[in-house]
Length: 180
Length: 223
Ligand code: FES
Image (cartoon, rainbow over the protein chains, first blue to last red):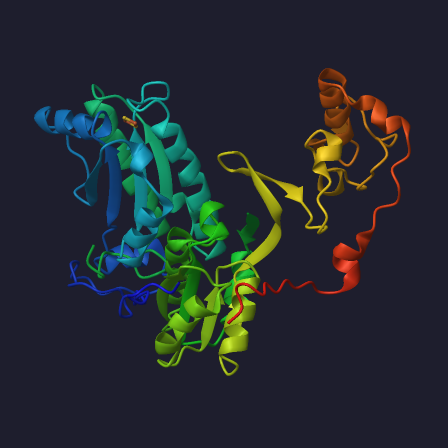
């Protein structure tokens, strides 16, 4: 029998992506060389999906150790990287992220057994999907670390930010102008 | 269930080249269970299409909907409102029955299949599906220890394995179990192997596709 209430259409965001602009710098779309983009005031917007048991605690430790890591990295807390899904990263890119990484427990140490292994596979799929629409797969990465590795957390943040800075703005615009 | 998988992205983007407004339509039936065309896959495809368009600086609006089923007219009817809003293309993420039903109900609407419909099967484990039925229309698995030689033997042999069976695998691929190996093993243990000493008569295929497209009409259900 038909359902009493009709299935609603979920409208896509207005183009460009909805939300208040967050980053002031206007951006050139497409493949502007990274150096030119940076000269124009572009700074990468990076989203880090961090497991609460390891990377998130490591970020806390990095903070209490007064370790510097790039302010471009914004952390999203996950209960375990097993919660990570391709769509979370795609939405981040739709709303202006230039790079996304996932940081989970060391393999064998996930509190839910294999959430981090599953996350790594999803990041692998994400790389393929992004490449198919012309994004550099290097814009996404999976890392593993433990809660006691504050310095490693800062190093990953620096390493990934350097990588994305080298790639330049996201092919979809990037720089966070969509409002994450 | 019907097992399907998404078409390559460039084929899908080719379908909608030049479109300004697209509706991605999923199905909550089989393709949700086999992770090919449910709400989640609709969301992912829609997002990828938006990113692809944004990359090229193209304006593209992509809306999403997932119907209860696309193989039943009453649910396909639910598209009548949304399709009034002027979509340049509908990408159906159902098995091929979905886009056929949408195309028939909305003749003026451009409809494309976003999935390849692959086979009738089941999940061997999470993420692995295998063919188990070819809908021959006259089930005989009870004669073969519960295995279907029609769908699971590469040659659909009904009188025992061919010479390509080795180590329990089919010569076509090491990922394919020789179903005749499984049948003989099962019947050797459970009894009943002796009935294969006779020759199975030629199967009557008229209940299969040989009789043309099939149809079932149930008098008790008809209005
Ligand atoms: S609990 Fe940390 S990745 Fe699963």
